[in-house]
Length: 419
Image 1 (cartoon, rainbow, N blue to C red):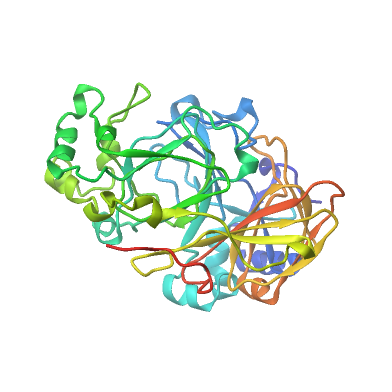
Image 2: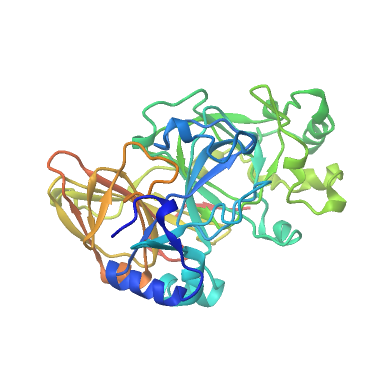
């Protein structure tokens, strides 16, 4: 009998291969995933993740509130005091669970596909809901060269603001991106010098854009951004590197340690090095919105058939397609077959139905230890063969978001961010 909570599950530490094979056979290429909650000690939860309000601080007050849910993740969260499995998704089958990372490690290309396994030896991307009451600090994610200096990977990312999770915009539904044209390196350096004096004024050098539900952005490494208070779906590279450049947010201190946590120790007080981590041309791009803003693009003209598939995250960073994502809407009572080019992680944001016979159900409220039926991982062979989506509701659409690995979708719309 299927367990109902995480605490009822056994953890597979041996025979993970047999566990994964049985789960894939039963699910016809679909792996059920358990909710994966991540806290951030320096942020204020936005309360739109459907997590029960009594569980917002389930990791303990000192760890901070839960403001993120990670999807199909084999990436560890870079949090101080973290639990050993924090940020890692679990596959659930019958009364047992195993880390998706371990299942991928055992079954390899049978899960992620030949090309991704041959090149990366892992599922190299993940996505999450990122949900805060207000804005977060102006920060960047290092590029590959910078991140490798501390043994990590750089991180491009993309944003999409699902309407189902944004019935309210919370305190500041605007995001600062980059720096205003005309900003100078000397001004940024001065902001770093002023770190301990209160607000270091980094936002005075930037400009904010109003966020619109149902749209998104493509954000390359080394570009400053201070995400606003919409709940955000974020497909991204499998890394948790960042550097915060803002010293005070809504009266809350941002410690210097969050600026330099992924910087070589000998550079922790090298202001010139910290300034040079910015991609200056992209940060001061006068056409920043035109080059980074994303509107949904239909995959095909299928509305008359009762289903609409949209590209929601797309584009290339220096010629590389890091990650892509789609939003599928299936009308009440409709069944449709959808073929994709590669494996994907899927989260249900509205309605109920099935994928290849596996139940999908969007919950209204989730306890911290609950197992849900809203998240799955689809292996490459099943995605290529085609998945049958069925909306079992008579009144409400079934809406799912799914994200894909690198260079999987050459047919995706193009939006190039260039140096």
